[in-house]
Length: 163
Image (cartoon, rainbow, N blue to C red; front, side, top):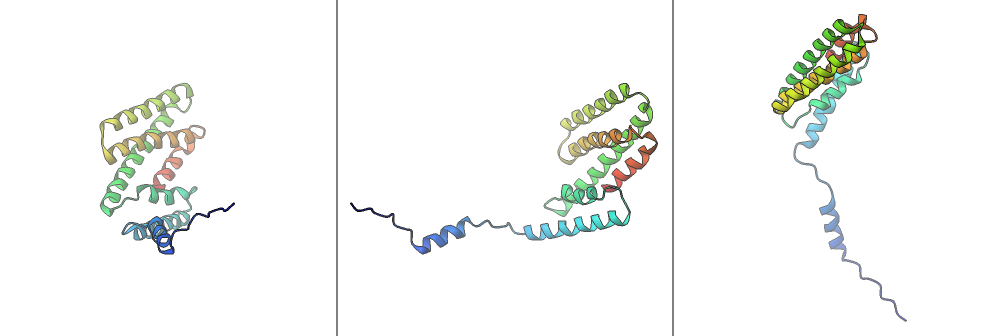
């Protein structure tokens, strides 16, 4: 009994298949990655020099606002600063108003988050991003500050500086 082995494709066909399967980067992708890496490291360095409590947020912000064009990145950065500032201010108001009454603090915070999410559905692009950011920034700051209301301003300032 004879067994027939399957024939192998020619070497040129294998080379072509490997070349076609190799991932290729779009033009400018390497420059984009290098620019964002440099900006991220610079933000991390500045955060360390400022002795911020949690400097990783500064570096992660760079990657969050990274866009394909510089103009879009600047626009997203502006809305990120705006959303963070509004969220920090609301967190301070909620913490100051309801620090002693958690049964009112949590519904007020939930109402703010719901309002921000609702407003974001009516907005588009980076404006919606700012509205959502205002909601969850208030939650991050207020939930951290409610246990230590005397440090609420420090917590809000640190969170804002990371952005």
